[in-house]
Image (cartoon, rainbow, N blue to C red; front, side):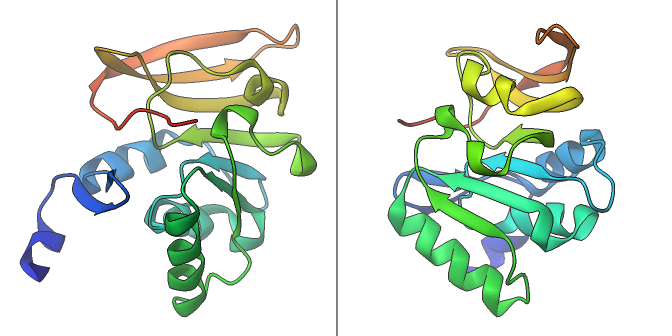
Length: 168
């Protein structure tokens, strides 16, 4: 079972969820235009792996993550703490609501697919900030968007992807 951890494919992590294939985490980390000190919101903590990668880019005190599953959130908190990412903030909740308390964010990324970027999340991104999300209910596209001063998103499509659906 441990040998599957090195496969470049999505793997089950419990509660009906999966961790993205390593190449997809790398692609998203590359597309995320985050700098040290940037405040980043993650929608879908999962096991905490993607949050740890983001913490390496911006510092763990600047990573905020929302997870729908209480079970996964608790495990992710423990795993991140065991690995020294004590300051990654995780809360249990509906990702469609974002996490207004720490807004505005310089960037937001989703590790689950949504029909579209929820308005409350867009509202929590600063003008000029970034949203990276798999969008679609059937076929999904990885969308990289910049928030315009008027609050709308300028979108770039980065090809087809397959993510678990957002729950809530």
